[in-house]
Structure formats: C-alpha cells, structure tokens
Length: 152
Image (tube, rainbow, N blue to C red; front, side):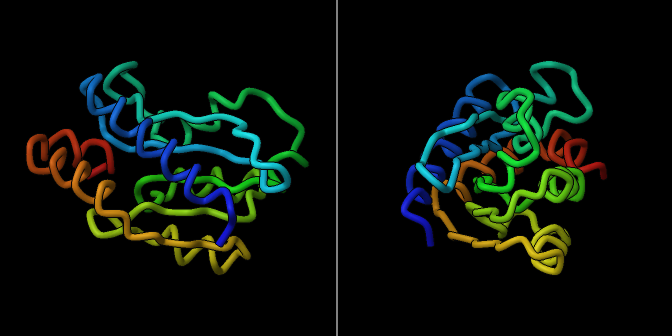
C-alpha cells in the first residue's frame, strides 16, 4: 500500500462521478508519481461525450497527462475505479506503469488484472463500495451502453 492510494482513489472516483453527470460511463482514473505524490493527471471515460471508440477512463487519464518521457511513467501508479479492460491493460504495459490500484472488480473483471500481474505490474484491488455502486447504477440504467463500452 502506498501513502498516495487514498488520494488517488478519491480523485479517480470524483472523475467517475463527473463522467456520470456528463451522461457518460462512470469510470475515472488518476496517475500519481510514487516519488512525491504529484498528481500527473486524471480523467474519466469520454466515449459518449466525445463520440470516441477509445477514450476509456484510463486512456482519458493518460491523454490528460500529456506527452511525457517514458521514464516518468515508470515511477507512477495508475488509479482506476474499475478493473481495466484489455485496451487499458495494454496502455499500462506499454508505458511500463509499475503499479495499478483498482477501485472494484465486481461489475467487470476481464483478464487485465491477471495479465498485468504476470507482466510484473503490482495490482491492488481496494473493493470500494462507492465505485461498485456508481458502476452498478450505470449498468442497470444503461445496459446497452455498457455492452457497447466493453465491446459486446
């Protein structure tokens, strides 16, 4: 556990709530530098808001961080309110992010967590009730939009 985990999950959840308020999928993220707690960037799923096929919460977070040297990512933790899909898992691996903290994996759990761990990324699931509740509400209210978001 890192001393920045509470902050990272709080920011990720606020991003998820913002996404829900905007009419989007309530998945948020945050990237924090492990060395000093600097919030490098945050974001939320923007697929519906921007008509995007790829702006999941983790991808939006990385987009909002802007361009950085590869070495920066290697000192960071990515916080996400929901277990990462294959696309987001790939981005975490591509940039060599060594640690991923997941709000919940009850509403969705693909192979991402296992694959990250197999590739040397530390994965921590915090089983956050707020994250579970907001995601379940979205899935219950908009199942077709949820299935679209996960490619089903």
